[in-house]
Length: 453
Image (cartoon, rainbow, N blue to C red; front, side, top):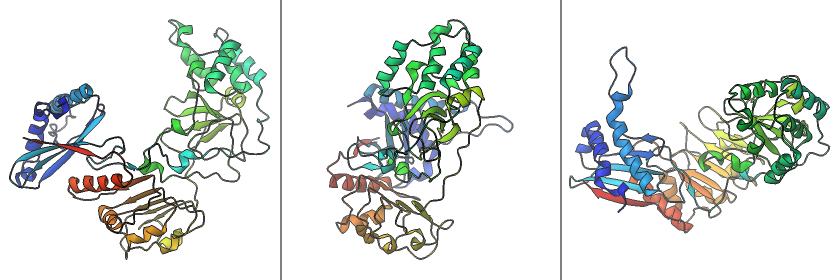
């Protein structure tokens, strides 16, 4: 047995859990759950309140930290990324520790040990992550694009910089598999932005950043911001959609083979040249890829020359566009599925609802509907889902999934699925339900090790 399954690994944490939940664990069937990974954890331990007027200190939580670190050390020794666990009082009074291994077909959940999406088709990604840029006839560089002016300006601002050679630029192009725009070549001919070129001059990076208008990546650090570079769990990504307005400067993509990232704004937002602009944009425009969003980008400047010479620094991510592609039916949004039904509808979310259960008949047969997420208890008849033949992602409560399984009506075109759990619910039946779904696609099952304490 590996060290994560040793009782000694868990003893300090179990002592804290029992002390924090003595009442709940005193009765048969009582349980508490948690999850521990290498860099974070969520454990059911009550932390002591600091004295009035004093902030919490590390020593106030040292027992928790020490206990968690012992489990993290075992994870590292076993080569495991994380572990979900449940402490339960059995009917005969024994204390049981359940260790859950999600396996390769289940994403991480956010309420342990409840699960993230079940990956029913290996390697499948949501539709927005498969979307490539559309061709824009007549797209051209902006009139402001002037590689010669850009290079002169940067040489004036950075007279002592070490520039890249033509061979180094060619090497970068070969690595990326793309021909760099002339403006970007002009920039790196002035400075290749390598730390070893600056030696002990620790302010050199600041001078380059001030001259260019961003934290400039070295020539070796250039990368293409395609969809794969912007990963997102299925349970969120499946609810996104690619929407590009007819006059948009930037296509509303997750990523593009034409987005060449060359810098950062210092806050995690990437600065890129866009070689696949929207209908209202220019080839080679500068865009900002917001690290807090999983889809889309915003215009910063019409060209790299414009950004550098005119010191363009403003950019606005904007609000999500109103579009019939994504619809939410709940107490604060649309008041019916009929209102959501539209030929372009891709994503339908049914949330908190205080009216009669909702029927799905108005969206049956819609050609593009690929995602349905329904809050537990909101559907009048879960079996209507069988009529939604184009679904690739489905998120339902345990009772709705049970109805589909019992009727043999689980849509077989799904690539991923989620079990949505709200309120108090024992975890083990949810894990068993997940395994039933995984078994339908012959995917690796969730395994569980039970340790008697």
